[in-house]
Image 1 (cartoon, rainbow, N blue to C red):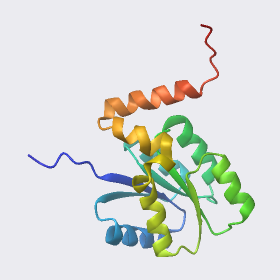
Image 2: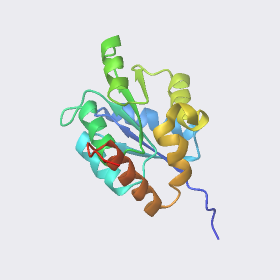
Image 3: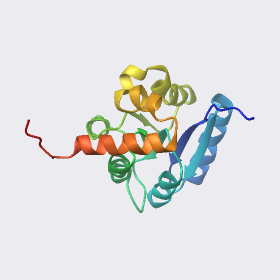
Length: 166
């Protein structure tokens, strides 16, 4: 029988092919136990998110078909267990604050420093208390596809505006 340990899946979304290749090499060297998926557009990312159980998504903010903030909102609505890290070459404090306020786990700027990028990717697994909604109880409970789907539905329901009277 094979190993029952599941590989963590990282989705990298950027419209620059050379940047995707670079991050792929860095992740293969530094995080060999992770599986990496690549999307060169927001629509391709949506497709991959719907086909794979992604743990961490690194999203470029400026892309032609769907910007990173639109994709972040999609992930929060449809895949709330995915930890999102925003990446941009146009970093400023306002954009970083907006990203965190809108639900991103972290924000990093291009050009990426390899060490900072890898530390940022490792953080959700090494500091589960700082990533409560996804890496804390979410990863512990979502070892099977059916339990992950159920947990995502519970999180979506919890975010809804339905009020209960006791």
